[in-house]
Image 1: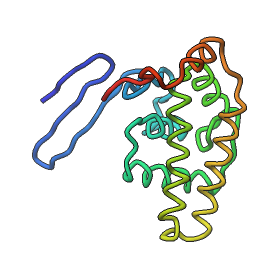
Image 2 (image 1 turned 45 degrees about the vertical axis):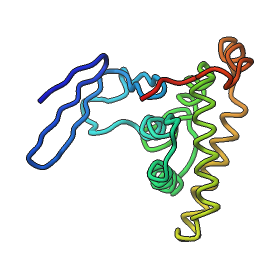
Image 3 (image 1 turned 30 degrees about the vertical axis):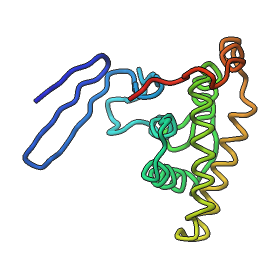
Image 4 (image 1 turned 60 degrees about the horizontal axis):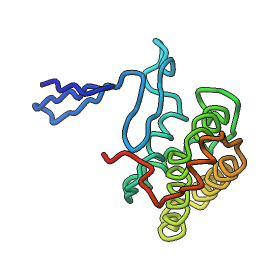
Length: 171
C-alpha cells in the first residue's frame, strides 16, 4: 500500500511489519527541513546534521527521542567538531543558516538540547562516563553555537512574539 502526501510517501509492507518512509527534498514534521541536494547518489542516508535535526525538531520530546539523540551525539562526539561542511561531522553552517532564519525551529532545537541535558542528569549514570562526557560536550557546543549564531530579521521579529503563539506544526 502506498499513501502519498505533500513532500513524502509512506510505504507500508505488512509481512514483516516493515515501514519505509520516503521523503522528497524536505522533512516536514514539527518544522520544515529542506533536503534538496543533501542525499547524493552514492550515499545510503542523510548527513549526520540532517539526521540530528530530524530528531531535535520534535516538539513533543520523549525518552525515546532522548535516547536516539544520545546515541547520535555520542557517535558524533567520538570525533566531534563543528565544521563548515562535512558528511561525518555536524555542519555548523547548515545549523546556523537554517536555525538563524527560523525562530520556531531554533526554539524547538534548543529546548530539545536542554531536554537531552536534563535526561543525562537523571539517567546518565547508565552510560559509561566517557560517553556521558562526549554527549554533554556536544550539547554544550551546540547550545553555544545556536545562542551565538547570526539571527535574521524574520527570526528576531518572530522571537519577539515568543511562545505565546504556536511556533510549530502538529504531527
